[in-house]
Image 1 (cartoon, rainbow, N blue to C red):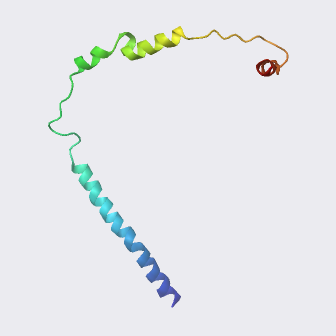
Image 2: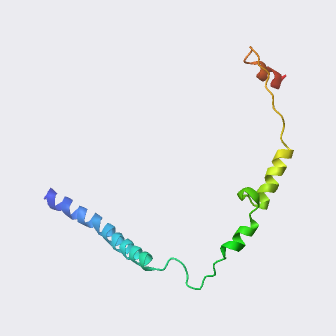
Image 3: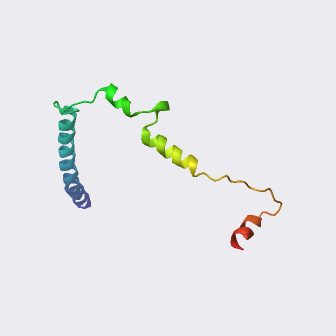
Length: 93
């Protein structure tokens, strides 16, 4: 009696899983048969794409950002001290 009840419960629980697996297999088959890119898509030639890149492989925006960072840098120097808590005391006093 228990075996029949357990077996029927397992079969009922497995039905939705089997239905989802069938749907997933169908979607995967459709996905793999579809072309990777639309046929009418225009691709930019490589010569136009490299015009925006400046020297060293950086774009103009990257060069501008690096220049701004270099202009705003602060020279940081740490004084050697035997007291490990001196920076904390200096910061809070």
